[in-house]
Length: 206
Image (cartoon, rainbow, N blue to C red; front, side):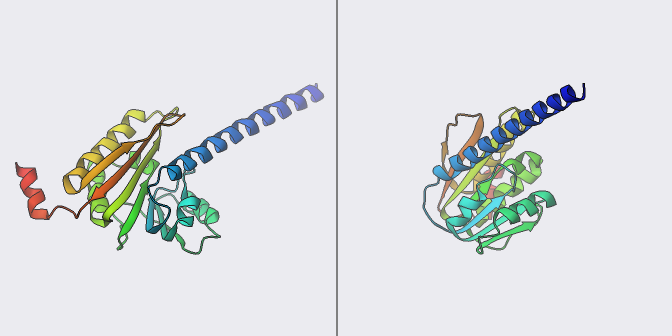
């Protein structure tokens, strides 16, 4: 009986390890999908919002002169710092966005799973911060994994709210990318400068 129990435990362990490897492989493929769709080989300054396991931080940092990642989960921050330990140009900070926003312009902003954790007012504030911070002809990537997600509708609604608010402030071009797995992956190219506040308020009152 003990031998049988040992074999069952061993078999279960092997199955768990196999499933874990499959999840890691899927995450790596999603990260590669993000970097494959970038429009440039090199960026001056990159901001990543959300250091979830599904991240392309290492590849993004390799393409950047300066790379900054922000997350409000200390565990994600520590994991990201470990992944980026060999990238001296990379910084990872524990911060809540959009409240704690860096004082710097970026020509690439990547937003991942964290967008689903924001309420409507925070999403609008985030869109405004991104519109103000993104350089002329800057690029914004919005990526959410929808595979087996209980909050799929919430994530899609959050992305739409963000896009709508961002479009009020900057001219934009949007490309949606298809994936083998279920994912929401948008590239938003911002054209021109941010709409002046007075003009923005006129639009709101129209």
